[in-house]
Length: 241
Image (cartoon, rainbow, N blue to C red):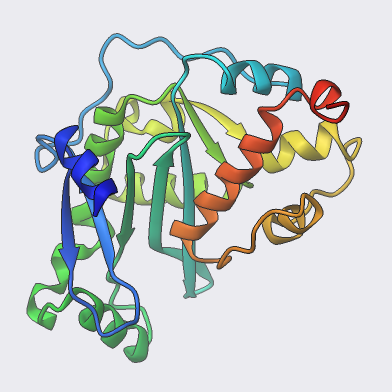
């Protein structure tokens, strides 16, 4: 309750969805999110992050980092987005979207309708077609300098396919306009000498981080944030203390 009060005071209104599941979801909503997808105005792309030293400097500076994670289901030999979550590193702002898709199994469609407590006739309001422009506006309102993911290749491809289907202007596609940090790739290059990267769960286990519910986007972004907090430390100093 205290977190929700702080968010409301900061201008974010939580929308609650009743659910038959043991958890409830809420989406942080900024202002003017229902209009056409808008591009950020007057923002230059941040400098790339190519080392853990540069990452530590960014994490301890004034830059805003949006941690992003997507989850998929497969239909017709193609991945389709069914969840997208994000949170600003070190801040309270966060969001979590689930998407309805008629290509999902009947069981998953029913789970979705129960989660959001909406009739099937209104489910189309929760498709990628209707929600992606809203998410683009939300990201623009958050004004991040960096977009952080743990292996962003599939995420960005799926977003790009969706944007192409919707004919969204290229300048509105935040995954192209905001400087991206693929944390999995960066760690693989800097720690494992370019060897095959580790999965998010394995990385958290190696760092002895608290267990997370992996493969749920709202929890994966928390796990990524925990890894970022680890690399925000000056390990050459911290390990000596």
